[in-house]
Amino acid sequence: MNLTFSPGPSKVEPAVRQWLTDAYDAGILQMGHRSERYTQLQKQTVELLKTKLGIPQEYAVYFVSSATESWEIIAQSLTRARSLHFYNGSFGERWFQIAKLLRPDTVAQPFGIQEALDARGLPDPAGVDVVCVTQNETSTATQVDGTVLQRVANHYRDALLCVDATSSLGGLHLRYARADVWFASVQKCLGLPAGLGLLICGPRAVDRIKELAEKHHYNSALALHEKALNHQTTHTPNVLGIYLLNRLLEARPPIKQVQDHLSARATMLYQFFEESLPNLPLLIADKALRSVTVLGVEATGARLDDVKKHAQAHGIQLGNGYGPLAKTSFRIANFPQHTDPDFVQLQKALLTFGG
Image (cartoon, rainbow, N blue to C red; front, side, top):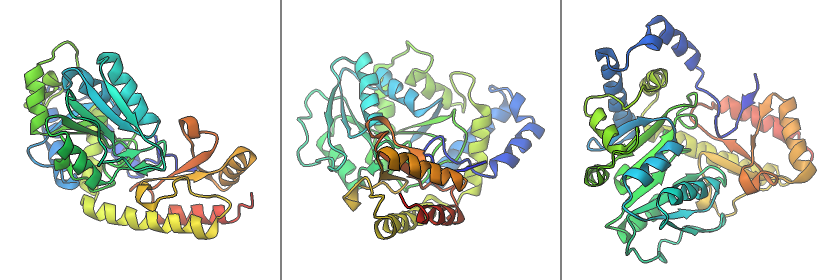
């Protein structure tokens, strides 16, 4: 099996193999989701999320199918009429498109991949119910700094700030109190098989959920909230995924320690490309805009094909570019489940690339 650096679905935590056997032997795969045993599992997993990831105790955690589902839940259950979307990549743009289908007054302000989100030139807050930001844009290998998020929150005080943290939650020490809603899927920094999402809502978001009381969908946020009070879900959940998340969180160190490791490794990797691989320039020029968890590298035409084939010959799968960048770049995931020896193997392979 090749060592994959795809940013998602990405390399799975190696211990998952044993945890799957444990789940089978313990009867997890046939556990009723209304049983006392399940409610204890959900309760403990939420407690671990708050302890290990630094999520405030007053924030609610809901289990959904994916981050994509969270886009829709925010539009249908937390938005009165209009959301405002800042994005510089394909995932942020898709979130805007989904929201606009449900709330036609929704608007967007795109910005370039080599530009920072301009927190000092923000549109008028009048009429904006929800502000949407992709903290770590997987498609462009960029990130929005926490201080920028704080300025956005301060400017739109009456709106809810909702943050897509799909490729950073579980890898970075996110300051959850800076926003009202955070969400992610587990197949990136959390190192688990796809099929489970986390929707995290602060007190102001919960108040909005109750205010709108939207009840037209099986995953309406009010129903999610009411069920979560009893450590349950509105639907048959991904019990195996929640069990695996529980085991992963038990094994992981606190998030500050995880972030320190990933940040140091990202610095090393960016320096490696700049100093040792001038024929493969980095996608993002400004160091302040570069993602810690997803690296983007420029390569076009035959060079792009050649470097992928070269890596493949060394037992390595590089992540493809995405969307408009699919034919001009490749990506490298820097997730907690990747080991330092994984990156030694990657560096050795790329050093012999002469394209």
